Length: 124
Image (cartoon, rainbow, N blue to C red; front, side, top):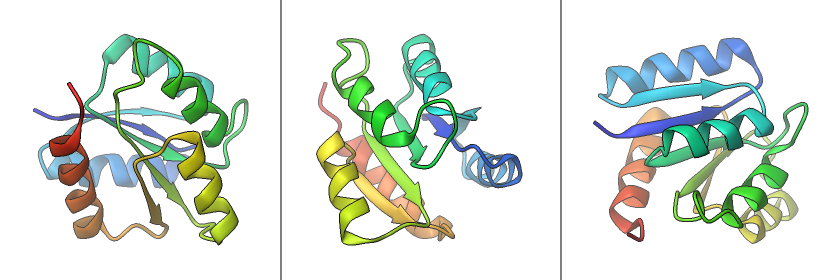
């Protein structure tokens, strides 16, 4: 079973997306901020991380940069999920090391495609 880490600070959005992904056969570990995402990524070694950008404690871009510079997590693909889709935000997230950028509200079929593509392309 593919293991996903979902970092989203909005509880209702996090729970809804986690349930929808679980119905598609994914195991989902859900956390509320970037610092929790780093801890969970190191502990659970997910196949992929779904990361919101605007979160308390540590934002998504900072968490992505940390994850991509950590020997234990740098190979884990990250897909950003954000309502902010300006060129600047996308460029910043890509520079931090994300694999893909999906706009909110999430279109589940498209997100599942992105997840599968990222997992297939994941370096060993």
